[in-house]
Figure 1 (cartoon, rainbow, N blue to C red):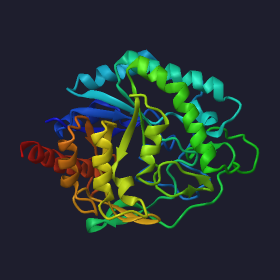
Figure 2: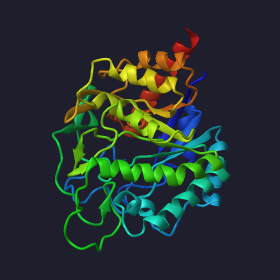
Figure 3: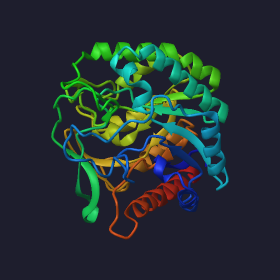
Length: 361
């Protein structure tokens, strides 16, 4: 197959057992998160959004503990030992770049640290770094029996524009001792300017390291969340990102679920956007998930049960010779003793069958 089947795993899930699960389900690639949300618990933030929005997802990591070549290479070896390849790291730790996002006093130091991390990825042979250039991050989600048969899933039941407390960015606390108050809102132009500066600083290093930086669209894709502007909350804004910097390392983390949640847009915009950006060769990897509805009211569904014709998407990707991995990202949990694993196995079984059918056409 030209396209590859992958699985995304959070830090606490980076175990031999889960690598074996991925391979048994037909995956060939892993996308790894090195930030564990909900410190002290083994939870996926996409499955259990906490109540009390000031709490966020938990604490950011140690700002002085950068991901080393040894750590990254060791993870690659553990994954390769089970017949898989580590394709990407997804999301910087907010501790490593909060002042890049906030334009704070530690910005220049954090730029140097981000460059070290990217060089380390290159030395370890990891070709992609996924990121989401967002102040508020993923927030405003609810959980409930939203999917087929009452399966537990995530959704949105209205906008969230409560201000974000000081000491928080990307929905995680990086400074628990920050003074009381809220992060000052900025304009969309200011945020785009910060992104342009980030790309100018970091993309030359990524090119030298042979690492692609892949931007995730804003999820949920609202113009503002928690009083802060968003970047790619409409599909055409991906093109604005591409046009900001022509570097071949400037790539997309292409999330079908987020694209499907966007408004306003034409009924077939998900397919048009898939064609537009895959034909430019800008997709690093794809989040292959489905939803029903659009922001600020949507629900995530099983992969075969939402508004998006996923097979149609695969045919577009095949036409444009996309050869990267697709991962379920997240999916409804099933009523059994292993809800996450069952949900992922269902999604990956569907994806593997659909890939084999489309590749064989």
